[in-house]
Image (cartoon, rainbow, N blue to C red; front, side, top):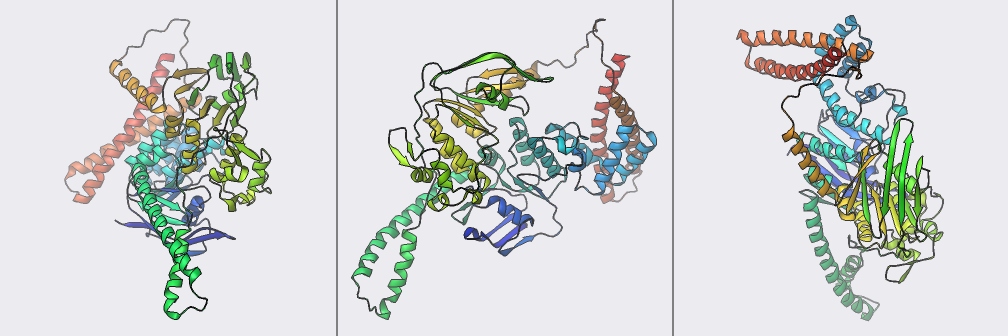
Length: 624
């Protein structure tokens, strides 16, 4: 294994808070490593230290020479004054300049500029990057490359940053929560892309399906110690449980020995002999081992819920639009007791708007919402809540209730409930400002559950929550005595929690599916295969009626078609020239291989450009 990255004895603290100490690990070529830890353990901080954007207290980071490294931050920093295409190609150097010139010439339609741009593209071998970039941007549903970044939503900016990280073709890619704000189709595309590439990866994600399908190795930071597992997420779960059982056995043995040694310490005289000193030193070591605190994922939350009557919620004939964008179109639905629905669909199809309508936060344009008298909503919003950073964690919870009633009727103090929800006593008395982003989200979720809702709405609850918290939440929802409505892109979470789906198709269309997400995914794949089988090899275009006016090429499309003609001609000339050199028989073997590879590249570009040119030409001919 060729070592690409060596992390040697890295330590980091913030005041009295020690995040990690003396961490050591190596990431080698072709490894795809997932980093797992509880919120607040310093995952993002560690990535920032590795990339050099944050300082370390001690230790060293060693990279292999001449390694190109890409980094997708959890909250990407793009240049708001520049366009999408400028941000995407910001780190591509001379190739980027060539592509900028080409894009500009294409938009202006000037033949003189176009020829200069084409020469520049050839000089810097930028065609492959341009084709690859267009494909990645298309797959990530980024179409208007000249749109300014300042006009994009947070989710759109994340996709632009992801495109920039992939287009730069790094040898080593670091990803911090890459699936946040991506819809399910894009997450699945990203999985396939990373699996089929030769990029070495180090990433933080809470998407367990993603970890299972992409990673070759899992690194866990647990109680400031690092554990390495040579396998995917499923392997990690199996081996972690074995580690927990082994460690629990060791602690039990140490506890039994500690009781005996404690009795000896109490019975021995104050003036101890030198001969017994080794036993005294050993006693303190045993005590440290026996009293260490150790937790696992077997936490169960059974918060009570307010009694739910027979009438829950009924939506009748809902319409909602924003300008030309239709969110709902004559939508009706009656929610039943104990129903568990997942909401899925592409970003921008109105999932969050729908939730705000049924909770009556915003009104529909048409239709009615009837809510049962006993319904108590618990609404976990995607944007979170505003918590006073100057408050202590335990005080935030006490503002809601002094005690929490569980499902079995038992009560817990606020402190006990916080502990159950993975807030250790020392964290409970810390100020909210000291919490990580994920810990704040966990506190927000806790404040909702403490109110004993019976209609629980979760809008992207898996963003920024660690895997341990997600396991706790899933366990809670399994026995929740009420209605659950979830918007999520986390397939594992949907499979565990819901038994039916509302699928937002776009343009106000909503369909239903009876089953978990994996059932829907398999059904959708089967439908796509059937459509491909039934699709005719060639379809004749039916003649258009006089009343059907064929659309004409836009100004930009006509300029694009003219530019494509020039490009295709230039590529055909280069192809002929390279073929002539290959057929001459005068080339050295290495040069011959390079020329053969170039022919293959030209054919790929020609195929892509030619297909687009034919598409535009067909529109133009039909309009003529």
